[in-house]
Length: 213
Image 1 (cartoon, rainbow, N blue to C red):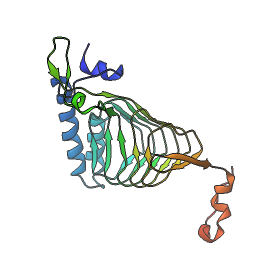
Image 2 (image 1 turned 45 degrees about the horizontal axis):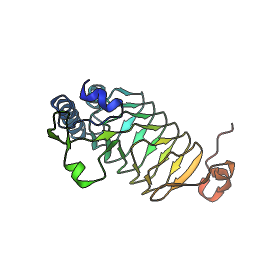
Image 3 (image 1 turned 30 degrees about the vertical axis):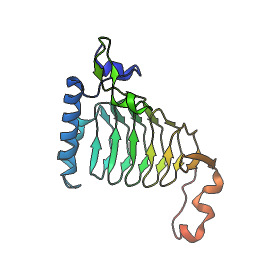
């Protein structure tokens, strides 16, 4: 079994294995290349993303700079917006739907290290040789979510459709659809409803209109 297969099975793997280091080096270089471009260099950016990610839907925009750990383990849908300083540490799979908005400094992480310090330093392989290991859990984000600045999504989390995640939140557990959630750790504050419509804030809405359903 390859180290990458071990990741996808949720088992311990060796992040320093040559096969994984090669994937990460490629992703790090492509991330750096994208981050060095200007936002109006549309063709160059699109070409890099095609090489970097497993999937990136039409209309998705990354302000940059960006950092992907593996790149090929991330699938992103259509019309997403990612503000400055996006980090996706996609050892395990990261799946993001359509029409999401991410504020500055968004971070999505999937790897997990042993809790005990001696086990973080090393475990033993079948031959009794010391080896540094970790494991990872996938992250899934639905559609039409808004993430405030400095949000961190932790390993194994699923966030449902139409959620708002408050700035500075650390999301350690699943968030159900249609939730406003915030905090450290992030907790559901309430369910979003028609009462949250901009139509109830005419002073802010000014001359604009809410589309009719």
